[in-house]
Amino acid sequence: MTGESVLSSGLSMAELGQRVRAERRARGLSIERLADLAGVSRSMVSDIERGAKTPTVLVLDRLATALGTSIARLLDEPAHGAMRVLRHAEQRVLRDPSGWERRVLSPVLGDVEFEFMRTTIGPGVDAGEFAPHAPGSREYLAVERGSLRLTIDGRAHTLEAGDSAYYPGDRRHAFANDDATDCVYYLAMELGTPGHTNHHEPSGKGQLDD
Image (tube, rainbow, N blue to C red; front, side):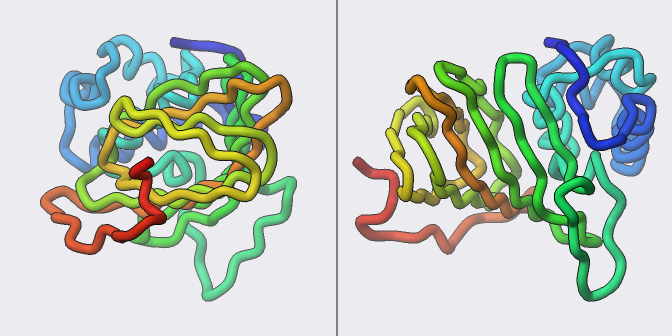
């Protein structure tokens, strides 16, 4: 599960590997344990930490999820001060070889596990299925352009431009574009913490219950 260079905003694979290793060690995890939690091979984790292999976005997301954090925290240092402006050229961009792009719009904020992103999926591209995040995680999505097939725990929902959705981030979720034009959507992800129980799930007609 490797491809072309994932990052396009200045972070080298060696720097990424160092951050993955630092997060792993901070949690007292061995390479074997991280590989098991992420569902990838030990050699994959080792190669990424050494900067020898470029992970796909899905693999990087699996590692971040196994570490209880977000991709954004693996890509950036925490911001300092009350305000942070991220110029377009400073935003971290991940491009997957299968034909889609994730642009991280939010800065990393201390102990806050939150990520705001803009994703572009090319025509006919399946971005794959993402593993459940920590219990209590929430995701909010809005489609700007095109059509998105959003699948939660195996159940597909088609969202058109202007549609929005909420779903628990601690479920399997997948994204695909079945149309002949680009799909662009925004996604805000609020990560829960281990041991958290979600008592605040929205209710009503706006849920993904169609």
